[in-house]
Amino acid sequence: MIRRAAWLWFLAAISACSGGGDTLATVDGRAIETSDKILLVNYWAEWCKPCREEIPELNHFARDGDNVQVIGINYDRLPAQTIRAQAEKLGIEFPVLAAEPAGRWGQSLPTVLPTTFVIGADGQWRRSLVGPQTVESLRAAVEQSRL
Image 1 (cartoon, one colour):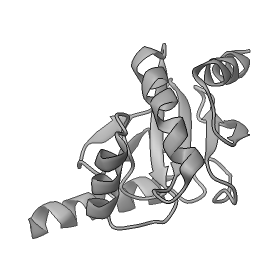
Image 2 (spheres, rainbow, N blue to C red; image 1 turned 90 degrees about the vertical axis):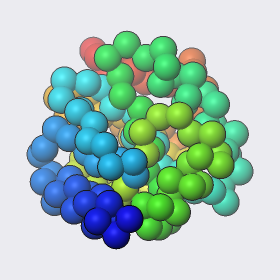
Image 3 (cartoon, rainbow, N blue to C red; image 1 turned 30 degrees about the vertical axis):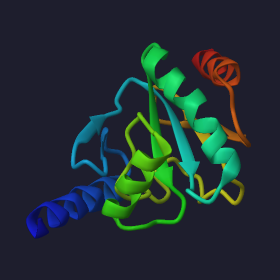
């Protein structure tokens, strides 16, 4: 168990420090490939009611998104095991990162939750969606980032 936790933090540290890399480490210890995909990077917290209300929309979009990767980041920067337990409790079905990749997309930590960064397939930040989103608003944001 200690080895697994150390490995998770090692992967998270590499992802957070790499800045331009194309993989990110999840709370499950998996690396997710992000190159050539549009990313919807959603910041959430267990205590955030709008975040909890938005999760089913994000889950639905994650299942049906075409060349789009939905990624969750816990706003509170908790240990990976705690984040994983909260994500399970909230029913999050998309990958959740083990650590927030500070500054990776040239944006600071959001001050309002939920916030979703739209990252183009080129790895560049396109816009921030503030407040709870719907499948339709997520779809529209993705289409705008493809232009």
